[in-house]
Length: 450
Image (cartoon, rainbow, N blue to C red; front, side):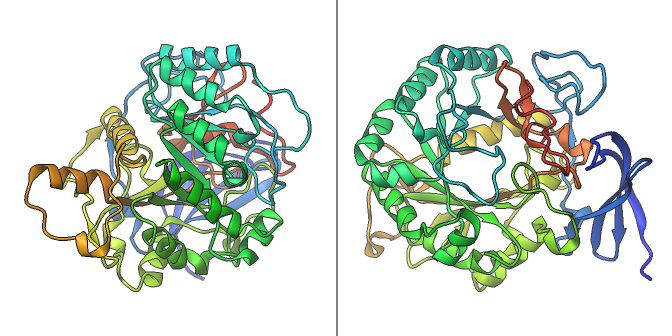
């Protein structure tokens, strides 16, 4: 039997009762698990890191930065005082505003357990109060309009216009793309309102994947949505939910699909499946996809065109939460890594990382106002400063991923570093993983309760 060792002591929650309990990052060979025990419901052991790059070389230390303004008092301790409380260690980078709980799909996996039907949407006045809350808390931040499916609102352009008017420079839409594909006039209105970017649900390049995860064939719809966004010069980030035995072998084809559509597609953002919301199975090693798994598959499935070593730990959120790599397209499918190396031993303030992440997304996940659709023959050595700037603005491409936490693998040390926050119905600012966390019966810790 393989022996293990404790490499970090932290706290977690029991996945059955959501009681706070002690937890350990437990290393066995090149694998790391989160181990914890609830006095009422027993022991739990969940894979959180698998192989190279090794966890000890991956982690970037940061100096904590407390929120500029806390809206809740510390009473029960993390994660029960979110709002956000003064025990949090990172500023907001991206704030999610959920403008509807309605949806036009019934996906197998859904953070929000969105529904079809005539549910009441928040009013423009309510949404204005959420924007105001974010400004009061230290914004403006990058905004992601989410749901449900936000495009079910006919006044979505008004919500975007309102946000820009109140000082939010970067507003992105999180969407499944169905209405974007079907209603070009709607896309035109979104462009006119100032929509900067689209975070497009894109699980793969064949319909077997969509049938499994979304319940219907959607690949042609996704392509049409991308074409309509291209017409109106709105940048696109493809967002695949990676699920074991469904689309892990499609990673390379997804990246190839995106590269073929540079500069309009700005990057790919992988999200390994987390088990909360609508889907809460028992947890075991076969259900887990870790950050190293994705990095190795990216290098393997792109045949070495994208090296694993060019994918780095984040400077904003906790190191165990994500990865990112930045590239410059040089024609003939050549990607040159432009990811910055962190200085040896460098420890930066968390707030600095949040500012840099906000600036990067706002700069690179949207398209310049005028984009040259150059052919391969136009990729030559540039000589003027303006040409260099145009290339850097237009032909940058990012590959990234975010590993959200569920009730089995939630690590409160990670959660305190979260920079992706959701504005609740009453205006609390809550870390994404806490807001969407559910127990084994699908009961939320926060969603629908605040």
